Image (cartoon, rainbow over all chains, first blue to last red; front, side, top):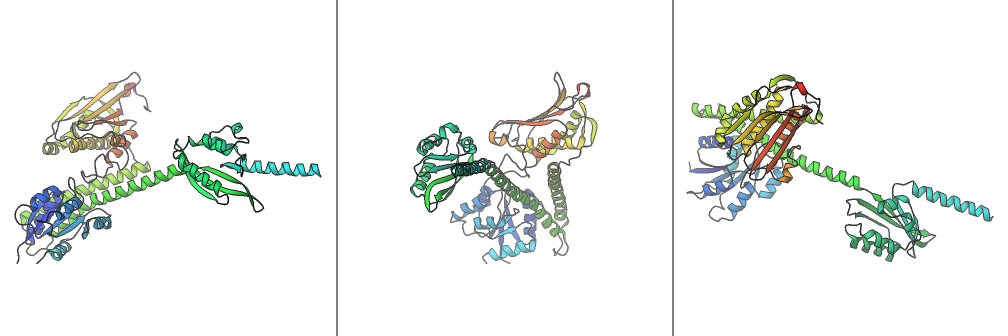
Length: 121
Length: 378
């Protein structure tokens, strides 16, 4: 199995905990960040992850702001992103981010499938 | 023949007079020479013109007089001149007054046979309708924003709960999740259920408060003792936030209030103080305040945190209002609104004072002490 790693970006501590445990059980090496600024820091520590799971509604630097900053930095702009939100206006979020946005709750199977689609093998 | 004609004429004039006086609209008729031919009292009131000034007046002087009342006199004048230059045109537009009124203006040429002899202007005050439309638009915007936040607040714990349960499910996991991870998942799932229960409680509260069906179950208790009890429940949150809690609670202040609702208010105020208190000390006091005609129980919750900007402070007790951006702090923006309604249902009031960067003081006044009681402070 190839080495797969993921950066989970979410301001909710419980979500970070459950996603980390769940993704580790499915063979991912997991890093976590509580907002966009922290996510950018994590991305510059060592090898960039295979994929980023990005919550859109966060304090500090939110998901869309993070995405803009990521795209402007050629060293990390290629890392694929799967966006998640609990808000009901998913369509407008998707439009604004240019990303596939999944609406919480996302079951494990769908989440892994989405990550698989975006990870470059 | 002559007298018959005159009678017919005056009958006709009376008909016109009665017709234009019976409408709520202001009406003005100007002939092709630019002279005022007819108007009603509604027109005079709308434009604050004395009727005597209007009789036989030249429209140019009339225009000069009214321009100062308008928000955009240049545009108004241009439209009028344009219409006088093309007498066959009809027009419809809105005029905004400096005093905040909005008036709809409609005009049509007046014809005798095929010849245009003047122009009829009618004016309708739509200020109230405009205000209602704006209020409605604002209400819809606030509701949509609330739905988006509520959806975010509800789906976040649901997402964690579902993943945690999937981790525990034997059908989803081969091999099964190890016991230590399973134990963490169970704790996490319980926390999500508690979060959801709290959110559902807030939503039900706001529904009850809005419908006016908030029921109080009064019992006699010591306010200071209850505040002390609530404060104890925050021990863990306080140590996490770093805020020291300074209590100054007079005992023996008893009144007949709904204990669980008062607890809810104190809980909400304390939890806000911790959330926005930036780890600085939080002071909570309960005192008896004697006034000539009444005695009150007064609760103060004072933090020294981020504070509330003046424009936010004005609306902080309104429904769906949050003094901070939605994506910076959780919550539905209902807490203080529900608190205010609870305190008001007790005949009391809830007030807030704050300075940005210095912190906030929330003060709950509650009617107390039967010795000098009066029913209400309103």
